[in-house]
Length: 275
Image (tube, rainbow, N blue to C red; front, top):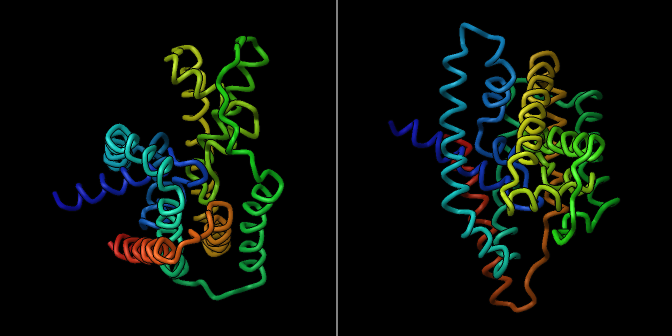
């Protein structure tokens, strides 16, 4: 029972991470030590009949934890990000930084090779290129516009859902980031606010396809090129610290508190990653 509760708590953390701008649910899955298991379950529950029940039960526990946490804690995260953004992001930076040693040790053979180093650099370059090329992209949240659903706009919304869904399980990449890049973030927010069933349905179909497709690809890569894939993920995670770093408060006492929260995040990450 305790193990089941722990799994749902981890699902809750992943769910909450997905509603925080700039924070990746995939990163938190890595932090919590369940990324490989999560990718395998998502990528194979349809095709693997022998382990289908096991995969579905695992995903159900993660899903229940995520849904409950989002429903219960979304207001809290909104409050913290509105009133204490630096403290909140620095705590998450601690969580991410504290996971780096456990990510490095997750595979038996992590001895650096040319291919592994190239994969690590590629992972870092992917995140840093987004952060440097589009530094303000996540800040556009105006929903005061009229949206016309056409074949073209619906297709773009579906594509946005696919990329956002896939981004949810790729460490270091925020799903909302991909929506903003495609100009669909405001559409999604508007659809949620107005509970537009048609638009939400298009988004849900795209997100579901994106999650499954990306998970299947990553699962194949983890099986065929485990070392290179983990080095790529490590590069994603290390680079993800840069775009969400908010700086330290100017006052000495506030800065000390911020640093303490960062180290608290490191400690929590290490504790959860070992479980």
